[in-house]
Amino acid sequence: MKITKATISRLNVPDGKAERFEFCDDLPGFGVRLRAGGSRVFVAQFRVNGRQRRMTLGSLAVVDLDAARQRAREVLAMRRRAPARPRGVSDATPRASAPARC
Image 1 (cartoon, rainbow, N blue to C red):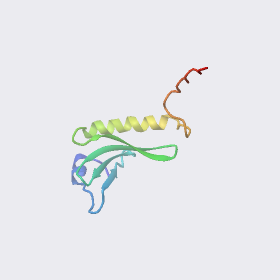
Image 2: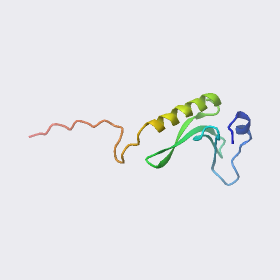
Image 3: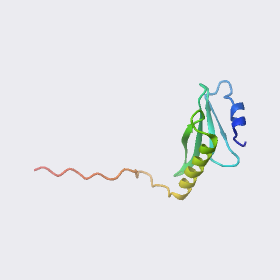
C-alpha cells in the first residue's frame, strides 16, 4: 500500500484489535501505527541484532507526511550503515571505579 494522506484517513482499527500497522510499498520499513483509542503515528521499522525494532517518528497531528517519510529514510539508512552491537554491550561509556579504601 502506498501511504498517502488519503489512504491514512481511510484506515481504521478492526473491531477487537488494539492496534494496526500499515507499511509503505515504496519505502520498506516506513509505516503508520493506528491505535484503537484514535492515536496515529508514523513509524520506522528495522532489525538490530536480528530483532525487530520500531521507532516512532511522530504523530500524524504534528508531523507532515513528507517530513516523516524523509526522517524514515534517514533512520533506515543509518541502521543499514551502523554495525550491530554485540549482545551485552551498551552505548554507555564505562565508568571509572571508585578508589580503594584502606
